[in-house]
Figure 1: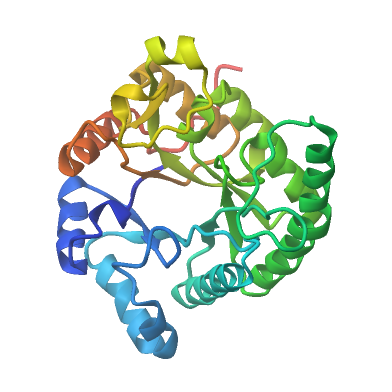
Figure 2 (figure 1 turned 180 degrees about the vertical axis):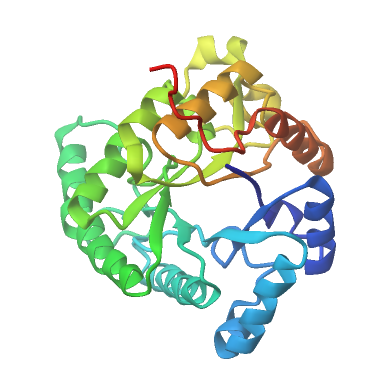
Length: 320
């Protein structure tokens, strides 16, 4: 496995400053924002698409520092009920796919998206309960009439560019757990998989190694981000929490850097489960910890993962 970094955390730095920081930390692979929610602070998408020589030079610039690109990320909502928003996010994704092909990057990360109600809606409607019955009817429509047809077309588009679609399972979108990811994958084919981020699964009560085993070869890319519960809020209000992420004290759970929500042994088990599922790719640190500085949060994650990240191929079972 390789140690990676989602560079959105250093959006305020220039490309050279970000590369210097990543190199000093011992980062081997970068996940670069290509638009959408992470923006594209380090990736001039239009310029690189317009000039293949610039794209080649960009890759060489990273290689000179001992780094590669693990994925391009353009998290958005291409199923948004507002047509202009949906079209914008679809265009961002398609440009990211084209750029990934140009940069020889295998994976583009995004969200599955979430539609609204039927005609006339302006806001996405995330359904997480089958009752009252009109909610189950709406959820079936969202999947069958919107999500599946869109992702069938879009996954095929990515495949023609030899690029894989890695959907990050996330609350607020149709794909938010292993079951929903596998449902969409069954309808679209093996070129659609998951960007596996444990932090979005922990709060749902999901056992991470079990989820990894269920997903298997659908795991295309992995985020390293943790989550911690606040029991006094959790036991009173449960896991569904619409408090602003800045209201740390009032929330049932908060995103944390690796090791500040679940201990080293649990992260060892996660890495072992990934290797058992034959994932030996990049572990990309995503920092969204509200209680630590950017530099300190990233450094703590790097320090823990450097201790436990398997680097060498597994041994043959010579004893068996």
